[in-house]
Image 1 (cartoon, helix red, strand yellow):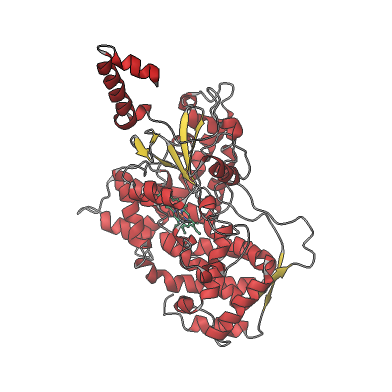
Image 2: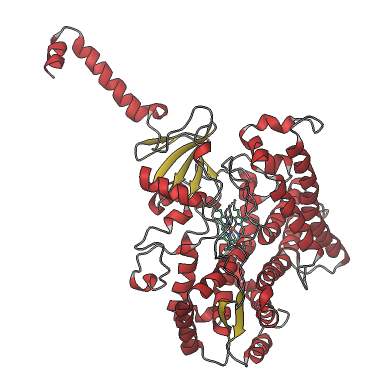
Length: 531
Ligand code: HEM
């Protein structure tokens, strides 16, 4: 200090000190490029943090990093910056409140540019075309509009209950059939009898090939886009050959159901659907459609359809990770619920007692009963809190430099919301305790977290939530779910990937009352005509 005083006494030094102070202030407040990045694990030159990211249970490692480094963790995948948001306040501050700059998606070279998913709404870069897709989808899936879809949901739930009654061992197939039947009817007006339907097979083929062609090695093209130009005869081009085969399957999945609707509209046999409604609305005076509108209607319909049967198919932003998971979110939510019910029989019984008291033995529960069933609501919330289906959401991309809590976040940063960590911000987070929601109404509602954030929030959330609630209520009311007698001792667990679902397990699903068939028939009789 003494030295500084001596130094400042020298003529001209005051000016120098002032200059240094100004420079410091400029660096701190005006020149964000020089500001510090959020904390994170130390990165290696060139590789960044690639070697520290495990292929399994990334959400758990990111949660651990959150404990160590804070609510925002900064890492690099090669030279690609990424932040991981580990708490709700930060997710709301950045992804919701600053959604005008946090709503882009990363560039998906493998998926969009090589495999042909470029018209999928999930992958769309932020801009007018993205907004057009959201407008299309919101017309049918907004909270008010989905009330019109309820009779369809209820009808398909009755078929699902019959399936569980007749062939309980195939419970996952019954969930798949439900997801396929509802989304195909809504999107293309198409009825299916079983999952062995042409459209379902097209979606599953496109999905399976996408997973197979999306190995970690193939994902390198997302970080080094120049690789996409490799000729297919050259060494190391196997990833591109597979991607191009996948492209044919993706195009067929998008094109064939769409063309069926166009043909049905021509012959006057089309059933009103998402696709037919948009085709009607966008026809010019001469009946023609612009190529862009045609592409966007086909692409957004294909996204809804593919998203329901195969997962929200997006590549991993982490080079050495599983590409994506292999099942859809709706199926994963129901599959997770069955696992939870068999693991927590006491809680299952308590929800059954509540339903018995409120609904009684003479009918099945409906959405109208929801406010009167607080314990059931808590059980359904606690199930998805403990095991959210999309634990890391889908990556957003920051569109311009930003500063948050004094940290610099550069333009082009990929942003992951760690939904898994966000939902663990409560007492005793690893315990299954539905009553936590009855005891503390300040806890964040998992339904407001699991569908993501901001302008990219899942547009299918209202449909998904009502399906999950109604199926959960009916299954718990109608069946006892317990471990299967010969289930083996492989243990229970979850797959890793963007969509998390239980590893295969067996369970016993037994009707609680001999009146189940009559209850299903009665509910069918109460459906509106034409449902
Ligand atoms: C339990 C079921 C579901 C869960 C947990 C779920 C979750 C999510 C999440 C986390 C995102 C990313 C949000 C973000 O980027 O912040 C998303 C996006 C999306 N979801 Fe879902 N979803 C579900 C069901 C559905 C259904 C049934 C549909 C279709 C009817 C659907 C259509 C979409 C679409 C089109 C996007 C992309 C939105 C965009 O990029 O702007 N989802 N979903």
